[in-house]
Length: 216
Image (cartoon, rainbow, N blue to C red; front, side):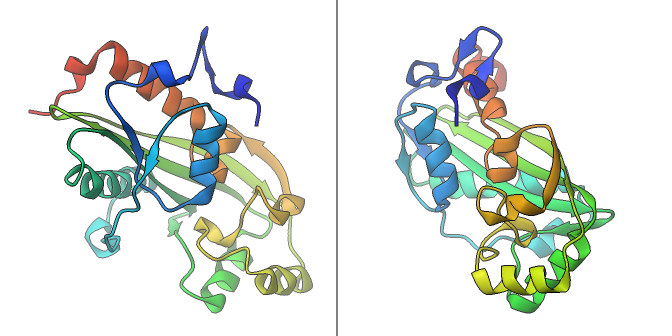
């Protein structure tokens, strides 16, 4: 991915754009690690060891749910590393009134792909950055994706590929699922799992005005 995609006005996200101290990615996602590394950032990785509290998030909008889950992930790592800035993220897919997270099994993945086939749906990633001295910033990015109709054989083949495992909405646009996508409106990296344009703006904002984002 070109660094030009990460540009924010005249400012490009670089290691000097960190708010303070060490940056930690609170995620086990190889896609998020790759996106941060390609941006030239130096960071550590600590996977959050929590069960996502989906039952506690009922009634929230897709954006609110993604932001809350991103915060939960960042918080559990921040509690262990209060000296660092911790970045957490969570991606969901929204179609109509349904929020699609990671499929539980093959049957769930098939259900999601059948629902998304031929649709225009929203991919939402919540991002939370928690820094020392109770400084934090939470936001989300929404990208609209149009998927062509998949045939039953194509769905069967995709299920057999196992690419759906661990992917919100049961597909990975950065792998072979791109053949089913006809239009992406907004951030492509958001659909991969981390909206780098938003991350750049958030880190730059925390560097410029950390006191404005201190939680009381």
